[in-house]
Length: 310
Image (cartoon, rainbow, N blue to C red; front, side):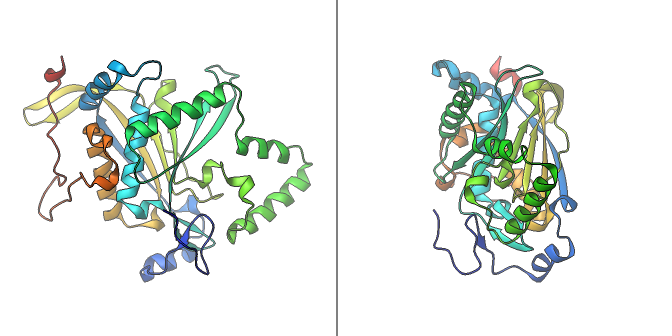
């Protein structure tokens, strides 16, 4: 829910006024987002997730549920549970978003010369995996049927300018961006202003990679999804070969500390390895909290062995 703005707030975020000294001062020491990146790579066991998708798709019809839908839903719910991930640095100040937004690139067709469209989706606290799947299919279908996106149209206008004028225009936009005054019509679908920018490299047969953040915009989290493959997984009974995928997460280290990032990644993995939790919104509070002396934390079902789904 959007809250009333106060002096110092931006259209896209509220000024965080209770920061500790280190986090308040860090944007002045390290003003560029691309210089403040933390990269985390995690392997996700797909055993439960694939079984869950098989069950969900028995009556899904023309638009099946996919791993990408589940990952997007898990990311959305994680951000609602871990709101500091939804912060950004702009104008050397820290802001908190009121909504969670995801952005990604969709190919209009899978070919070397296939055009790309930028998709920008906002989600509320009541979001579930069903909500995410419906929204994504709706937007992807729209752009693949010829629909345009606002950001691509805006870039099309700018690239027609002579180079000196384009350089001047971008310098002016960066000044406006520093103060949070860029016209909303130019950035309302710019993925660099999303809570999380996702890249599904697995859809084109590539593994996850490190991807940098951009100094333009407010995006503080970039997620890269790799391809499915088999790898040894440690279980209670030893090692088993299971289907997995890797996820790479690049974060702006100025928005939170390492412990907060660690707990957030743990929650994201819990969602992905127990996707049935995503059928309830984050507000339902189904995810348990880590006990101080516990090694795992969230009270969730244990991962079932692969034989259970044969």
